[in-house]
Image 1: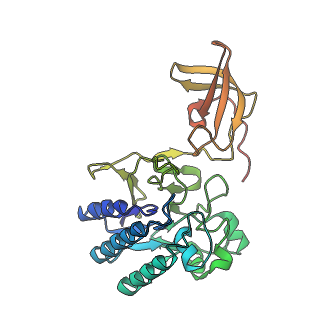
Image 2: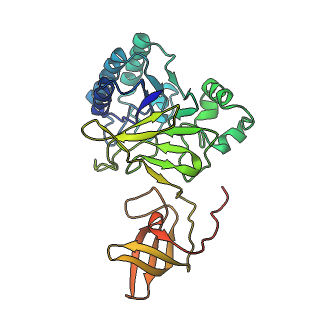
Image 3: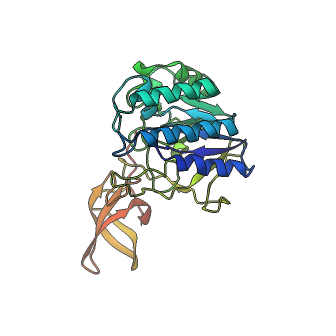
Length: 318
């Protein structure tokens, strides 16, 4: 089954409109929303943005009634009456009223924490090994795991490392099958190969309103496990960034001699500083400051994917 993935919306109804155009092409069997329809930077009193978003969702579900939806932490903060960054007390009643209208018009069965289609799991943030251990689900089948999680309430889900909160780099993701998630903003759709985790949230913005990512829809074939992005002309292309570089778990260490790529070409240098959680506007992989002896220069914020070495220390166990 070929699935159109719709990442975190966060009061940007144009994302839903773009998804409708993609679905209109007939190239996709169904669409899956990864949650977080509500809340955005400095929008707490913009009731029109909340209403426009629910209007767009309502129309999309009328056109494509087989659509599936994953709850996000921002959505559930209103349902469960829990505070969250960006939560709007001013929009509280509007959100709940509009949600119940959506439930009434289109049913509640499409709304879940986790959806499983063939051997692919869809959720807002992903299922982690730590969460499974904590809830004694490690030995369960993937179908049993999804069913159990969908029965859980806020006592088990409103905290890390649940499927509405987990982030790459902080936890180890259950890799018995491919997982597709949003929640963590990325500059482009990114596939963490060792974790079997596709992160699709590339429409989010910084607090200034500046875009973090490339704003591209993602598709996944749940049978062949092929995946790709959709460009501005709505035609399919490759473009999924594949990486094993994990935030918080740098491969290289201070003092290590490495080869790295710069605007001048390949350079040899010694690692001076390790930024395990990235730097300089990117939070997708570790970065490093490297001193190159040949030109007596310190190159800052070199991404881990731009570095190679003949010998590397083993990545920390997670």
